[in-house]
Image 1: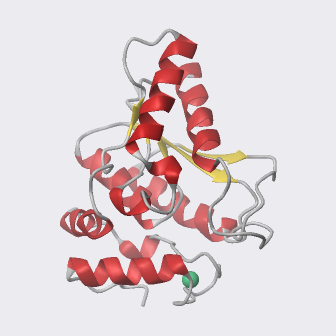
Image 2: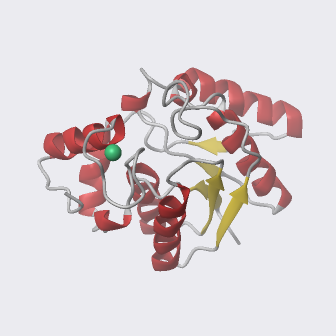
Length: 201
Ligand SMILES: [Zn+2]
């Protein structure tokens, strides 16, 4: 019996979520998306490590490369249009097709300003749509970190002994963290706020 699908990007937040849910005894399947992002190989490699360590089945979802953004073809901003809608919808289809009751995602409070599709109202609307569209009697999307700050998630990861070396945040490089992009800077700030040292730096 599987308890949930987890959308595992290989980043800090979703890796900590995987360890957190495993610590609660949840049996999960991990999905990682290839949507044409430039750092995809590294993300898949790191997601695979986490899935292996936690004994989770891991599937790579190949998406059509429709997303234009700074993360994919270098255009526009780092906001990837409608990404969470697509990822979560695929997670829900996967879950319902395999009798899995939940889809776990890592939206959190520090993402609300930049990413409207990480806000509670969006996730509430998506849960409602999924319930109406599939005759569900309860919400399927779970975002356990939704009201947490990034540094609090890192502190939780530290308590759970998450190997932070197995997490990739950089938007610009798939070899060494660049230290300059917004993802690297936010990661650095959150580690400082958490009072911890990032082993990748
Ligand atoms: Zn970077």
